[in-house]
Image (cartoon, rainbow, N blue to C red):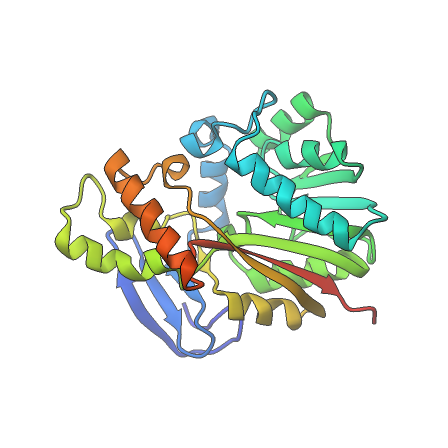
Length: 287
């Protein structure tokens, strides 16, 4: 790891050392990055495995999905986008998974399409939701310029090897005044900052809090200021930012007692502006 993907600084310091990898922090912009980064081939093997999509996190991502907290989060995000783009139009969901959000957006009147790196998820979305989904990586696909009224990234940007390359590509694909939504974990969340202290007083069963909080599939961790920088440097003005709660049960964070503890700690974090996750909505400049 030679330089920060966001600001190109070479000043990276060790934040945490975990059994399988380390977490580095950019001393200039605060971006957190996993080191060493897995190869794209390693990532593809994980995402193409059907077992990955059978985890609790995806328990309500099939064709018979019910209206739970995750679906309500999708609906709330879509409502905000629709308020900013009342005319609606083409919407691209990057990392669309099994297609649930595409189905919700289509029912709300959007012209939807998706991109997904998992062949398994692409086939599921096409077969069960009859939506247009391309297989591949969004930062490698050539989009016609000024194409989409809205682009969404739900739990995606933390999974990609080069976020700056991805957003640069997507910014050019947006129509002038088009809207982009990014939903991602917060590098500065109260729970994340507290996890080493929790490990010092609570025995690891079976994983430490730090190991639960830092997923091997999350390659970068943003905070609200550097997400803002990422967008602004790609001709996108930030319009709205708001917090989103942790979902420890869905994420499989330890025992039920640990999940309850994390949920209440995150509630405290949200009161001081340090919730576990956040959503940023931006608009592409007219020029």
